[in-house]
Structures are given as structure tokens and as C-alpha cells.
Amino acid sequence: MTGEVILTLLAGALIVEGLAYALAPSLVERMLEALSAMPLEARRTLGLLTAVTGLMLLWAVL
Image 1 (cartoon, one colour):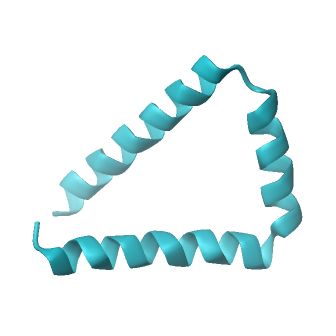
Image 2 (image 1 turned 90 degrees about the vertical axis):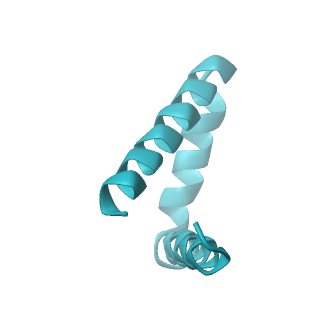
Image 3 (image 1 turned 90 degrees about the horizontal axis):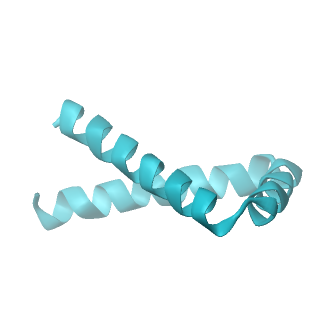
């Protein structure tokens, strides 16, 4: 991957994150509360599954 592609992907992630906070801040707050109630191992598993899903989508697109 070139640096340009990596920066494009990072910019896209920041746009999506920013829109979530701008358009639905109360939903983000509820999601953070739900995450804090989850056990650490469940959060770790959720993060790993999310990362793997993102990698699979990226691989499918590229």
C-alpha cells in the first residue's frame, strides 16, 4: 500500500467518526456506556472482530 492510500483510509475513518459524534452524540454516549459495562475480554474480542472485518472488506475492495 502506498502512503497516499493509507492517508485516504485514515481520512475516511476520521470522517465517519466525526460524523457519528456530530450527528448522534447521544447515541455515541450510550454506546460508550454499553462498552464500559462489557467485560474487558468481550471488548477485546469485539475490537478484534471489527479489525478483521475491516481488513476483509479492504482486501475485497483492493
